[in-house]
Amino acid sequence: MLRAASPVSIAAGDPYGMASFPLVPYSNRIGNGKFEWEGKVIALARNFSPEPHSIHGVGFELPWSVRSRAPDRIVLYLSYRPGAAWPWPFEAEQIISLDRGKLLLELRAVNRADRPVPLAFGHHPYFPRDGAYLQFKAQGVWLINDDGLPSLLVKPFGKFDYSTISSVTRGDIDHCFSGWDGAATIVWRDKPLALEIKASHELATAVVCIRSDVDGFCFEPVPHTNDALNRRKDSSMPIIEPGGTFGARIEFRAVEAPF
Image 1 (cartoon, rainbow, N blue to C red):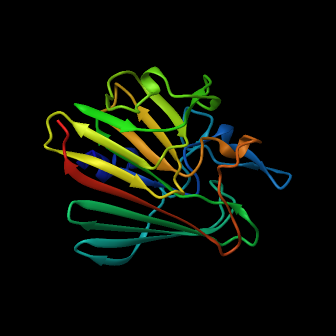
Image 2: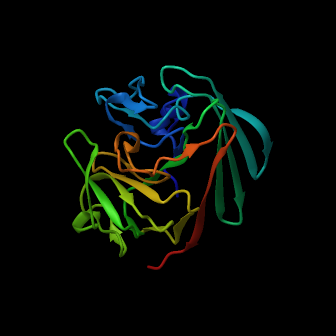
């Protein structure tokens, strides 16, 4: 039900060609790779040319070590030290397990800085686009400027409204939805099983990317809105105390298709 990674992408180590990847220590875009923290301007390395923004954090570009492995479970671990991509140290863990038609992701990140800092952990799965229908509910969708950053929060409408099950071919979008209720369903016309997605309350935001020129589409359970660190009135970015943990869960479950 996830888009399969191609042999070429696996050989190249291309995260954008995988079935999914982790979003840590932040989700999606930070405008122009800069934000202000404790009176200082923090500049991040750009990693998504030709865009001027930094995107998706650092966890999707770095190797993770295997802490434990079993036929139905694996624990992956990352220890990050400050660098050009992010100024504060953290540790992260992914526990990935399978059980009776269910894929469970348990995501944890620990702040190893000596002060409270932004730290979050989301996930970026790709799903087959052909014949796909999507349903989820959210309180609002952030319309974007020409630079791809959020500009105006409105009630979902038209091609942004997936409150009833709708084809993903209605129109291209790459937008952030606030007030997601933590549940989504994907159905494919040619598949006997559908996919239910359930996320813990820490992931109250969803990013949806549907492009007609890509074979997959994205429904990303995430903890904060895009560019939250540069939006003065946006408090969705988690701030974690020294030694504190950000944790979240995402469950993907195969169920009988409704049609």
